[in-house]
Length: 349
Image 1 (cartoon, rainbow, N blue to C red):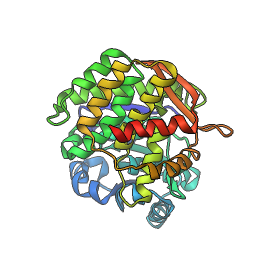
Image 2 (image 1 turned 135 degrees about the vertical axis):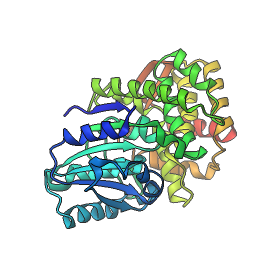
Image 3 (image 1 turned 120 degrees about the vertical axis):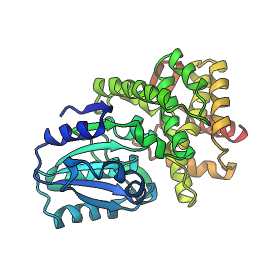
Image 4 (image 1 turned 45 degrees about the vertical axis):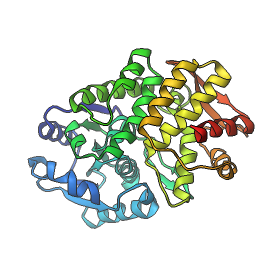
């Protein structure tokens, strides 16, 4: 099914059209407690949502688990959802990932619409058909590929975000710039994250989404070039899982930013990524993302987590590296010693 992405100018009209084009007898809206307070008031008065039933779940990635999915299934069942109902996921990546998975599996699949409310969800989680939940302490271990009917990107929600969530989304945008072209990379390194211009950011979001969309449409099931989107994620996901196990979770985009530092270093060491581009990118990340408190004692744990990564083949940890900006090298491997070197680089700043 084709997923249609709308860069919103008139949210109420666009949502009404999206709902009307989904076969629906009932409309449900999934929120977490944060988006219930901050984002639901933006849309609650829309005529198209006048009879919608709101399902509320607990916020943050710590709750992106099977128990929350069961709660969503139960709420759908209790309020008369059928296979012809429609679920609108209003929230960040946790809500769009979990809501997409719940919709994809309830009655063997109902239509869903994503309205991402964080920068991260706009440029990453809501685009590309990946849904899922965490399981056994591992990120996105259970899920399915299934496109939402629509993704509506409305930057009016960006004004509700705190600085930390803006930085999180920007980590994924930096990745998109690195796998795209030099001009896009330079623009991203010039953007003032501390005093963001939301009008400029909206244009950059549209550009970032376009990069992801082009790659996903060329490889919907991640058999080849879609692995470009994994830059920064092999080590980033391990750092994210490690932080969760420590009870000190970091936002996904922060983990990606730290993963970019490591994997660009690996790219320079293994496939000739330019050291001046490495240095400038790392300086930008160090200026905007706090140091991660890993020590040498954590390396074995992180290595074990990397071995669980879904991109791995046989006994090799699989990386996406860059020969240069836009020069994507998928299916790269590294030794344990090389991986530990990259963690040294991250730790030493």
